[in-house]
Image 1 (cartoon, rainbow, N blue to C red):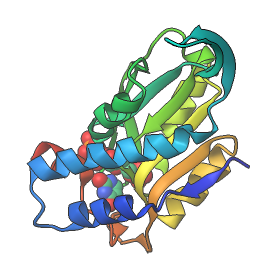
Image 2 (spheres, helix red, strand yellow):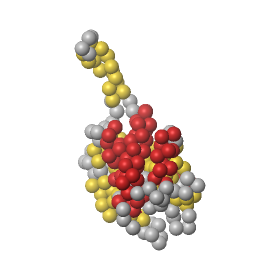
Image 3 (spheres, rainbow, N blue to C red):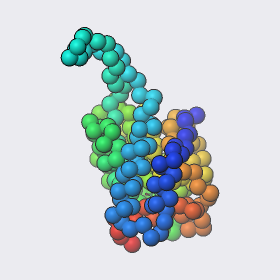
Length: 209
Ligand code: PRP
Ligand code: URA
């Protein structure tokens, strides 16, 4: 089974509270989602491998560390995943970015894929699939199915708020995928929204309704 980690750093908890508040407007919501994504990327990259290289400092020749693992691609699930990309790119600026468009049917909660555009070397990259919300898990499961069908195998899923139901469904469907969340909430309500959650992440990020 892949790793499941709640990244509950005090800064992340504080920032999540800001965006959970229904009076938080689009501008602040966007900024804080990016900040949380950046902080999560710092923690998620903790186990990246490093290797020795020789460099010349202004003083001596010296053996130092440099990143040596797979190159990264960030895959936001549209729309809301887009809100997390820039924050992660601040720490991993050379990452490529692929997009998977999914929307949940509001009645059935069944996800539908409507767009896929990926770097052509996803099979050799460490993929960070990002979406602020993991509710039933349907969207994340279908997005990862789609990536695996195209050759991806090293996948981490990163979200801000997860419901226990979604975590279990994703673990059952893709036990090889590591899951990182900023908060594990209580449950889903009868409309498929996370409780307490933060509402509709896409609408809050983009100011739609
Ligand atoms: C939201 C969210 C996830 C999905 C989670 O997207 O961003 O992708 O719902 O729900 P699930 O775990 O039950 O599948 P939505 O379908 O609202 O699309 P949007 O981002 O375009 O608003
Ligand atoms: N999608 C959202 O944007 N919010 C939820 O609470 C559930 C799914």
